Amino acid sequence: SPGLYIVATPIGNLGDITLRAVETLRGVSAVACEDTRVTGKLLHHLGIKQRMIRYDDHAGKGDRERLLALMESEPVALVSDAGTPLISDPGYRLVRTARERGIAVTSLPGANAAVMAMTLSGLPNDRFLFAGFLPNKARAREGVLADLAEVPATLIFYETAPRLEDSLLAIDSVLPGREVAVARELTKKFEECRSGTPQDLIAHYAAHPPKGEIVLLVAPPGDEPLGEVDVDALLRSALEQAKP
Ligand code: SAM
Image (cartoon, rainbow, N blue to C red; front, side, top):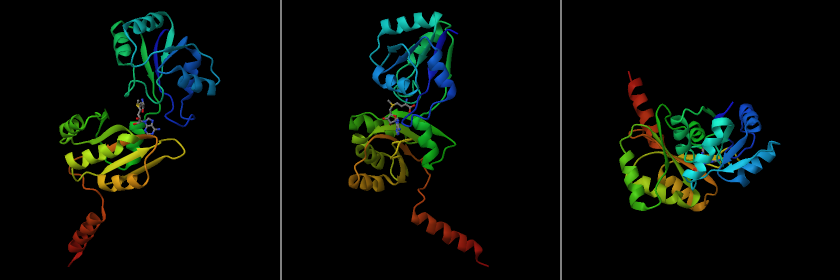
């Protein structure tokens, strides 16, 4: 039936797409996407021939109105290049306007780099705060980190390889003593997730320059890293207690 279908697509491994997503991409009248080459490849892989309509960060009101008009009478899917649309990807205004106009909107859940990194990192997951990309400029980046300093939750950032070192340095200076984790190339051949102090990870990535896509996580305040020192302290206090 007509409306907007927000469809999550893989973040690397093409197997990570749901049966319902495939059915929906096959069944809609058009697929709105960021980059027709990227989505074209996915559709080709799935054996789907579809009309694609570009809808990216530069889309203006005109592009949006054309899509909205179409979804009044036809089913239209929205995908992004990878993962869940709207999560650091286009679609917010489209969804908001569709809802305001009473157009049916539904979302087909699937891959998301932030959630996958959270599950892998070993950091506390009872509360987490997704904070998108840190700003490029040093001052603004430090400002954002300072604003988040007291948040009692694991912080999740999207990151890129060339900026990783600067972000780790900023975390080390603005949020000292926090354990961090770097989740890289998730669902792909060289997937890895490393944790430690910012200094540990700076040293590691100085020796092994990071490539590919990255999620950066920061432990909540007061959550001591499980370093050797802490293990020693725990053992000592256990021994103290065991004394007759
Ligand atoms: N909408 C996407 C999602 O649901 O995860 C995120 C899109 S955002 C433009 C791209 C960023 O997501 C990358 O810079 C990286 O931080 C993260 N990302 C996407 N795929 C990833 C992967 N396979 N491994 C690690 N991070 C990934």
